[in-house]
Length: 279
Image (cartoon, rainbow, N blue to C red; front, side, top):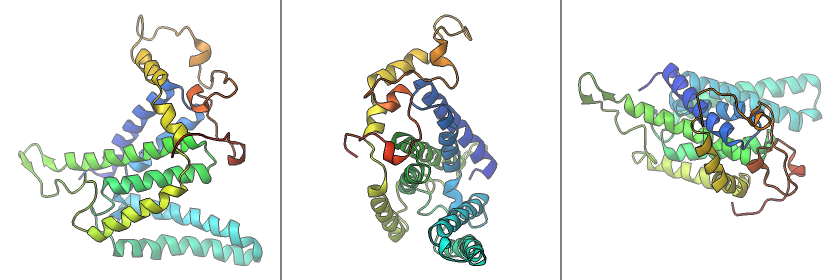
């Protein structure tokens, strides 16, 4: 399989390509591009969470421990003294980071359930939920982050399959076919649990209507086609500097779809406009 450095490098490259397309489409503000690319890069190493001593696994449980420790602190810590809050905060982190890490790997196997498209869908939905309800991102940006996460996840699986083919000796390694799969047929219980987790998460995800409407719009595809190559000569100054300048976004008419105008912002949920369309 590919090593950690290769996964990071290729995942960052793929996320950069996707971020370039999103920037060219002018569907999100420039400041949101970094968080989207970060989701894609993180997704490109996440499948190795089931490798006990891997850096992604240790980093994932460290970050999860930090996140949950603050959740506990801010939700119940106010009831207690400062010393008790410190105990709750540090204790939650330590429990998640070490016993949680050990327990997780007690019931998982590398290239098992977590090395599947089903697991990628799980993390995509989880990413959309976190970006929406924790970071207060616009629902369309939350789903874009989920899409970046999923694509990064797929890049990892594809890369592992590529490394399963030994070109020099013209042979296919025994690991071929174990990385890129819809679900792990060898461990049906794990696959069923992962599918159940996806079904539980989906009702918690933000509405997907505005996201689907935006990425399927004809003017979006037409704009990308027009900007794919320079019109006259390479690196010529652009005419519409107001539109192309970093940080600039076209004015949004009242009632316009924010993601279509490039003016989608991370606003509190209470201030969001009512959305239409199906999930």
